[in-house]
Image (cartoon, rainbow, N blue to C red; front, side):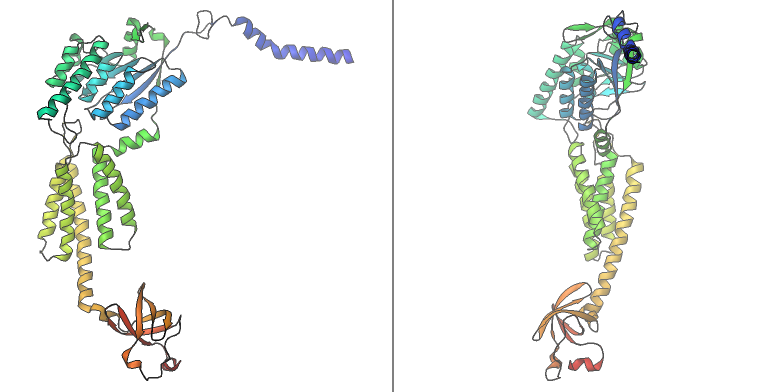
Length: 459
């Protein structure tokens, strides 16, 4: 029996080790080697970048390159469609592409897409670049952050710096550096077919897979080596952006920043005109802080921002000044004009459309005017009655010593003293926690007397 048990254990051990032994005997090289029985795989991370260049796109590129490094991707492919954007973000992205651990390809697509302004530099910096049919590239002249051309000595310094950057990048990639310089100095733009003839890009292709197939057949230069791969080897994996990128892209959209600005200002306006509501102030403060961050990055026209602020000031003055609606009309005009000129187009950001600014200005003006009307009406009624409106109300005694103390009435704590006609009346004063009636008001002091039943006066 002992021999049988030993034999059974040996058989079980051999059965368990059989797959491992078989695998060991068949492993004669790498997983994708010629003797492995598997086709080689060339992993490409596909990232879509279809918006203005900003810190959000900068973070997206950094995150994508880190994923390529950590997860074994052999190439990064950017689909680019941008009107331009911020110079600082563009420089950081160019720097990341030039120092990338893997080759970076840039495809301007799909048809109808563009690589304008800052996008030109990303195309120039790519290891391999392509455009889809009917796409365009160009117009890379530098402008001020607030929009408009840079003039004077500063213009020469900025332009020379940008020209040297694009020339050096284009020459290092073997592209037509003279055209890239003209795109900066003369704001020239060309179509995809013209860009191919001028050696601005390497290919004109309709899809990312076609781009990769042609790039792999020709070979992609990176780090002093030329990497070749076939179409059958390509494994394209699309990158899903994280929450940070999605939030920044949403926040840095010109229309979202505009709505946050108006919402923040309106919330603070409602809180200041109707103290104690709390929610409008908190909500408005959060919206305003987010809007100010976005506006500090977007090409904001300071005149437009000041006009919006002045419009709300005019609405607020309507409470104190009798203008028969003229201040409100002025506030509406300022709000509308400020909204129209809030952004400039030169930096690659589209201005707010009339379909957005006009309804928004009208709705916000209506809400603000309603609040102004209610507040003015309430203040008018209060000024008619004055402090005498408190006479006859009952207050709760919080503390009392001698003939003075503190009482609580209408949600507020007041200083109080015994009424002048209480001397010699036999009233011993109120009891803490008890109630008194307000007989008169002088400044910030209430004159009180006994409240409740007549016999309470002698307590």
